Image (tube, one colour):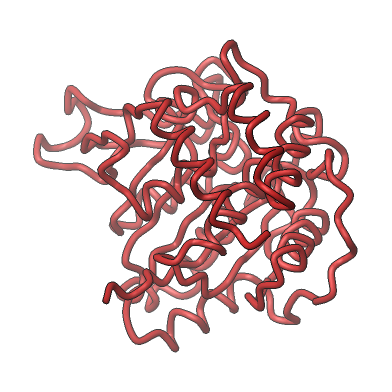
Length: 307
């Protein structure tokens, strides 16, 4: 019998985070120990409320801890223009029947890591502020972190500037701390997520998949991140990688995070090793995915959710 993989989700729900939570908390191969929230797509108060609404929707007793209200050094700017004022428009959720922990995100993660019987994978799909604060305040936790699977970055082009992806751009100083941590990192950035578009056909098919399908149909329909061919469910790709890493093609890379100037938020791949030794790599970077397979897998996950 395969044991479920213990994970912590650090997120800023957000529509694509909501879809990622829906898949993760219902997947038999994942054991979600904790969900922590951060300011990103909308304020941290709203991302926390959204996480609690989703856990109420699926009736999952997973603890939620609220995290950073703002980046380490920069002013906070949300993405409500993409995710709506609430962060989760398109479906009328019940008010949550549970509350966030009184403990903040950093201390909650620290506690879970220290109590764990084995190292835990942390999946980050928002700004990495909480993760950077954890590494700074509790470096003793590093042996208990199996690795990070991060939605963020790009080694081609950005989505909030010519070179920067939103999660890294929101708090580049935090991203630099995480990428410089020496821990195993898989970066699932725009090079993958802008290929793995949820097609209009997939969105329509969700309506046939009971209550979870109708909920996700509503969210995806309301999602403002529109591309030719569909809409990217950026954060869902991290969950796919956690359970089926062979479905995303990766390559080792030496990644530097730019923290100032016109390229702020860029994740630069030093593929020519101009700045690092030829044997230095600090991340496994996603570079390709079969979009049709991704759509099929996503619908399969929703069909298995309790209706």
